[in-house]
Structures are given as C-alpha cells and as structure tokens.
Amino acid sequence: MQVFRKILNVKNHLLKIQLPNDFKADKVEVIVLPLEEKAKNKGVARLRGKLNLSNAQYNDFQENVKNSREGWAADRIDRL
Image (cartoon, rainbow, N blue to C red; front, top):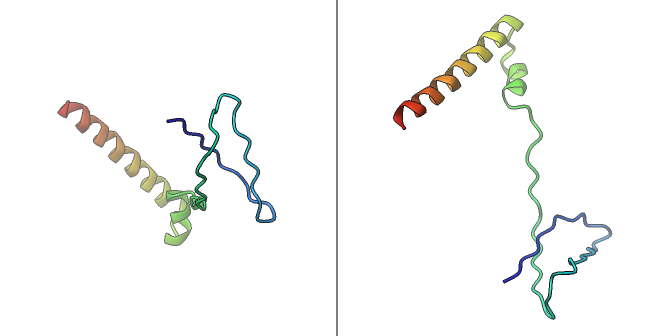
C-alpha cells in the first residue's frame, strides 16, 4: 500500500493536494485531521520567571538538572 503524507496550510477552507508522480492510484481516501501544534515554551527557562529565581539560583538549578541528566545517563550505561 502506498502512503502519502503532507502537512498543508488551509486557505479559505480549501486544500490543494498535489501527489508525487510515482503515486499511482485511481481512487484515494483523504482524512483531514487538525495539526496539534506544540506549545512554544522554553521549558525550564520559562519556569525561571514563574519561580522568581535570581541569576545565582537559576544557574544552580541548571547545574543540578545537568548533573541529574548525566547521572541518569551513567546509570543507564551501567545497567547495559
């Protein structure tokens, strides 16, 4: 079964779908789903403003996160 997937922009409630030349079919089924866009946040950096951290506190927090990730990675390698 051939599959063609493409994310398109809707303009005036219309879609224009151009299939590749190598897509051979006389009849197709089209299913339209809204694309769920991910929230554009900066994760931990966005959290900084919510916690009212000073620069020193934020840097300390970032260092702890980095060390935790490195510890998880090392622990994971040890288990292999």
